[in-house]
Image (cartoon, rainbow over the protein chains, first blue to last red):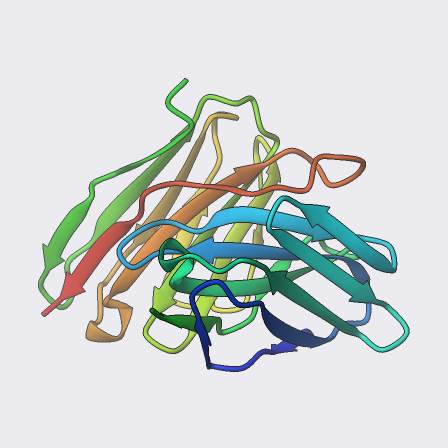
Length: 110
Length: 115
């Protein structure tokens, strides 16, 4: 089966940098995605990593190490609007299932 | 383009009642998914479809059925609702994986309460 582990909560200060980690177990790993969800809203796509290394999109970056079954989302220059839940998700290439972690709630202090 | 839409937005059912949730997408996506989201549990995959006429079970399929008769629509049915099915239901769609196409597009959600 598949499973993902990520911290339930993280707190950071406005303007700072925060890293949200995700470790996964899957037999047919295809790629690791990250989604953001504000309270009462729908998840929205942030990034995707299929290969090892860092992908950068503006203030957000995502990293993957397939040998360690590990990835992280890096948020820089934190803004109050970044207060949300962040989910990592993996796709299994054997059956195309996409499984999500339980999410990390990011609290930002002024 | 409307993207992914879900009908209804809210619903209250009594135990044992049945209902169907409708998901529609206008992006010509092959893949469609149904998730449920409960506090502290993240998004759990119920059923999914990789093309018109095909469906497959996800992590938590029991008590639900689905149909994908048209490419743009994915229906989720509850034959006999139970309080444990109280949740927020999200539909999503995507292109087949590969290359740049790895994003799932989510609908706004349906908040279902079963009394």
